[in-house]
Image 1 (cartoon, rainbow, N blue to C red):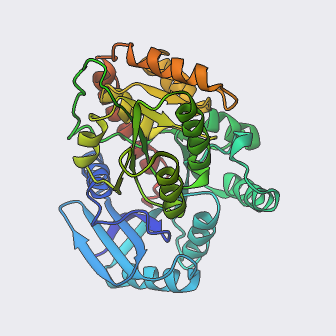
Image 2: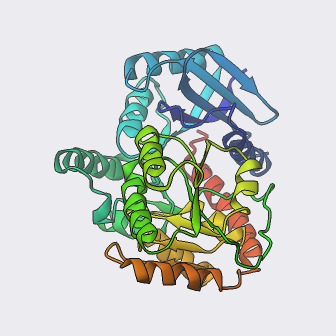
Length: 376
């Protein structure tokens, strides 16, 4: 018996059933999909690359991990097609995680079917922001690919209205749905409002990569340390800049004022967030700002660079919850911004605001799949 399915192709291995948050998020998608497609059941299938083959199933979803590298398109596609055939899957929609490599992979994958599945392209990066561009050659290649994807996809999912507006300008006829990644509030903790400690804890959480502001963070900490030394640093995350980032922070502040926590799953993430006094979010381009939103919900004041995602978050949670600074800020002004943030009361409504958004965004995401699923 064939099973009608929504298939998420994840050649980059970002979705892994062993990662608690990722698993919970996709199980939530699958549960909602099962509830609303009861008359014409659809099962959610996730196929990711990894070091070995593995299948992990729950009530409404199957996670497949296949042995493949991120660059082995042919191997990933052939093994994904084998999974489809072996499990009698009738693929209705293929979800591609970006408008570049993932879309090309999905396009080739769909050509193998007589009744071609529909394609949804997801855009998480803020392609409308010039700060996102990176190197000229890389940007030019990606620009060509994303323009092709925006034209060819059956619909596009973005995480912000600014990105959606940009896509509609590129292709006015394209169906675009704005549904950010829901924030897992299951383990949410609220920071206790404390008197100022002798040592202020500054947090820098997320992927340790230049694109996420590691270099900017180092520059700001150098400025701050030249003016005052009553602070320590807590870093959570991993990435290609980890070794250099750790080395430079230790060289600048010493070992006693720097703490590296590595990659954190929930609930450890929320526990660590609530131990902070200030959260720094310094990506030059931020489409949504998952980390800074989690910090606000935890009651931790945020200092950030300006971006589309940050502006959206400030409109949602209040400007005083997230203070914007400039790259050229002086050490004195940076110190004052921190003191001002510490004196600000947290937004106690942040949790309920995000809870309502989560429910709405989940409904919109599932509807975007059902709209293009062909049951003929």
